[in-house]
Image (cartoon, rainbow, N blue to C red; front, top):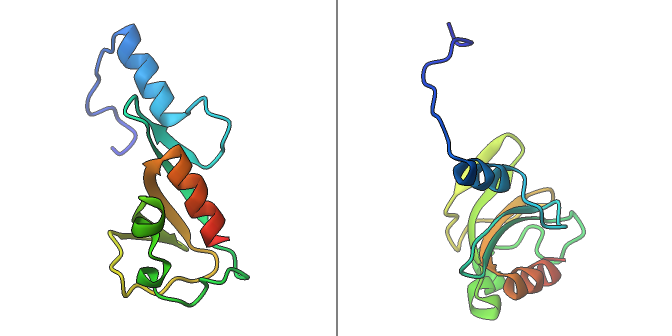
Length: 113
């Protein structure tokens, strides 16, 4: 039965708070996926159809060199492309999952338009 509980875990108050923060971060950005005490954030950046990068190769963005941000996955329609290679062709409507510093992620969002 797919609706039956297969496993139950008891969490402490701290563990519960960490889980809630991971699932629903308190940060103001609706695109924020998570943040750490190390100063790293993971966010979603949507590539618009009017972006300069629509139809271009991921490697052409020089994202890591320019911002220090890593694009760890691309969500396209109902598909997830983990660890896209430099020859991956971007498309309008793609959602890029990026990890880096807050400043780097903001720069990446600006560059991607």
